[in-house]
Length: 148
Length: 128
Image (cartoon, rainbow over all chains, first blue to last red; front, side, top):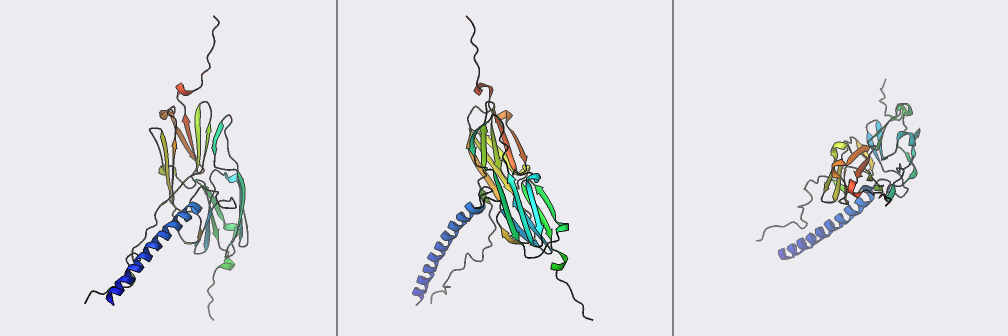
């Protein structure tokens, strides 16, 4: 019986090995999708993060080489829209050897879980990343009801 | 009798997994004119203290690390901490002393000037 047990143990050991192998395959798959150059999503739009922190949302977007004049942010209720265009500053009189950073116009829209107080939204552009701080509106916040 | 054995070994489950820094390839544009080779690389979120540019024996290596200090619960995450790595072969005619780099809006611009010997020269024909 106990020799059988060790057989089972070995079998699960093999499965662990397989699982690790599979994990590393998907690790690599993830990497090419998530950590490749910017603008590699199928829609050719920047990658974003959404963080929720108590009563604010924070949206981050990778927008390398895009000046703030080329970015548009629209907010209505719980709807957020980021659009913009990326133009390349190809210097005059240079031959092009390689061109991986394409020009593009992009558009991404999000429906957030709660309404946003559009008056208090802050946007910052730093090192090619757009940071949006979106406070939830007062009506979306939970309210304590006191009992009379 | 013999010692007791668990059916499934749990050795890996209890180990704390730290998030490893994933390496990525930055997208680059390369331009050239008579005086220099110009390289533009997209590295959003990288600060200039975390970039290292090495030129050694005809190889240019770029390496840059970006780290976020994110607080709060992430609803989705399409990008994260990353190390940008890329290597290029460059011709020996680059004047390494005069290489300049600038970083603006997450784009690294690297100027690699050609040494005088490599620049095209106009030969004037003298009248005999």
